[in-house]
Image (cartoon, rainbow, N blue to C red):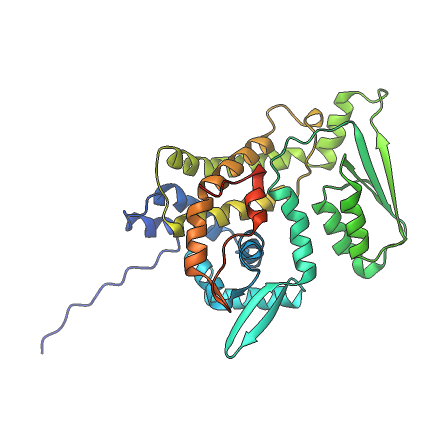
Length: 335
């Protein structure tokens, strides 16, 4: 009897870098690999948060709906398997973020009305070009009679609007607009129970004292370290693009999705503070400039992937909404 030699089986690596080492045709594989590895290596894997990024950054701008199979396809190479996708989608629907429409055996998902509003509030900050002026004014918000069942969600929404607790029961942010607060109060149906005030900086408090107050309550040191990590992770990708590397549509989509995912993860715990209240060479500004430049570089090739590979009930996803081209101060349609 002739024995066939035992076929060796190479242990499958979870590292994206192994994939890209074997795929020399991928133009930005080398700088993209550590970005994917960083996401896949984080435990626990934040698949649910990544899917929220997918709906907010992509699906909301392309018809608002996507087939479940396309969701699984879009994140598979990032290490999110089909079972994890289905579990995450189920939980997001249960939490009120997503709603489902079924046609035959296929399920199509989109933001609920409340989920869309929540992400739109976040999007105002995520895609801001920065540079807003400040005239030394503050907004103070004091919940006086907030129902127990809505406290956590209300405080989370305040956080997304840039408010921080500066003392027990008192939230503050520099500048800001009343419309965003009014929308928040309307959403939670709070015609009473919340007191909103305005205040101004005083010459009795030195600039140093203001910076110390902000650094403590807005946790700037921790945030700066995290911003620096993002800069170190994505800067090689920007350098590769600046040198003329042209990403494939899939690469561009993956890079764009992870860029916004990682950036928003930190940004939404930060507050858009005026320069006068920030440390010198604030890394949050550097991170925003990097995210803005990269997003513009990745917009066109990533959109190619989105419109050809992902589907909804009508077929391929439609062209980007008008609002997509307003992100980060403006994205050219002719990129």
